[in-house]
Amino acid sequence: DTGVSQNPRHKITKRGQNVTFRCDPISEHNRLYWYRQTLGQGPEFLTYFQNEAQLEKSRLLSDRFSAERPKGSFSTLEIQRTEQGDSAMYLCASSTGTAGQPQHFGDGTRLSIL
Amino acid sequence: GQSLEQPSEVTAVEGAIVQINCTYQTSGFYGLSWYQQHDGGAPTFLSYNALDGLEETGRFSSFLSRSDSYGYLLLQELQMKDSASYFCAVNPSYQLIWGAGTKLIIKP
Image 1 (cartoon, each protein chain N blue to C red):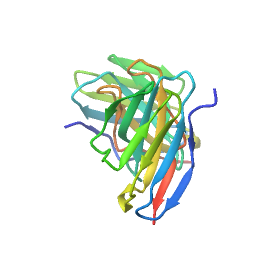
Image 2: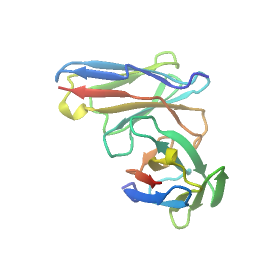
Image 3: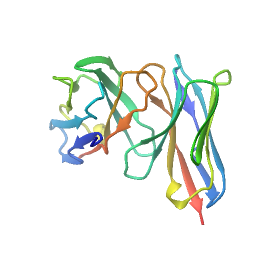
Image 4: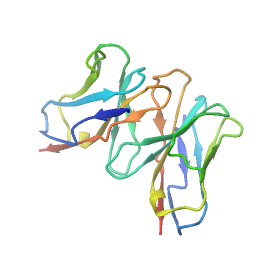
């Protein structure tokens, strides 16, 4: 069990560029979650997958954001036309299929928009 | 709306006991979780309460009262390494709704 892996760890880009982050969950976990966290706040839910199906999306996930989990294993989160307000830590978590089971987090991708 | 409230900061002395409270208001409820996060690190799971009562895991205990929409995390025999932010989080469904976190400062 290598835990949840996210890459890159850091991403610096200019406003208006597109960025893509990757998350590799714990292998036996069928649920995968994306959160966003800004300094001094708790994580905010963005979206979650059960296997390859995206089952829930937050209102925070504007049309510039898209997430995929094509084979039910790794997931990608893409942000198009990045804005200053997108600067945050993007966290991925995975869990087994029962509500309330602990979510295990990766170390996150810190995005900085210049 | 959905909200969780917890103190922004708590200070305690090494070796002491500290309690971090959390009150919540959500449209659904499966359970209350607690996570620890060190600066620059990922949140790590500490405990989960689905039913009323106290759950104990080593130096950490967590309590839930569903009728009061209230829970707390109790940390005993505080160590310097416990300095971190502690978040309560609620499952209204499969997602987690998080509080803003409590920064625990431990003095020697």
